[in-house]
Image 1 (cartoon, rainbow, N blue to C red):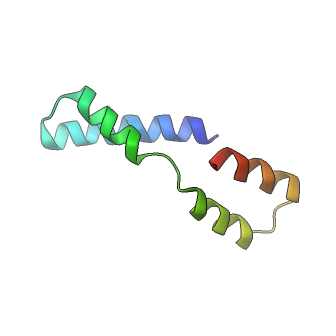
Image 2: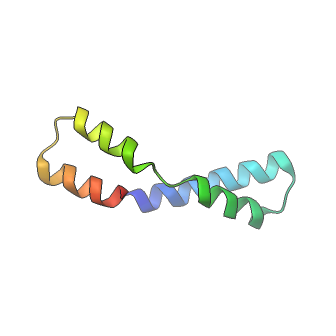
Length: 65
């Protein structure tokens, strides 16, 4: 799940930044790839606040880390 979201976020942010700044698309895709990954600590905080089964919580936490 996170891999697809990071890829989509990278594409959207890269194209958007390229359109706004008129910089080359490749440079903006690299920049957006750096800023797109999820913050593991934020994911863990959200998981603690939810009432998910422990197995599901573990899978999401491991994927975000």
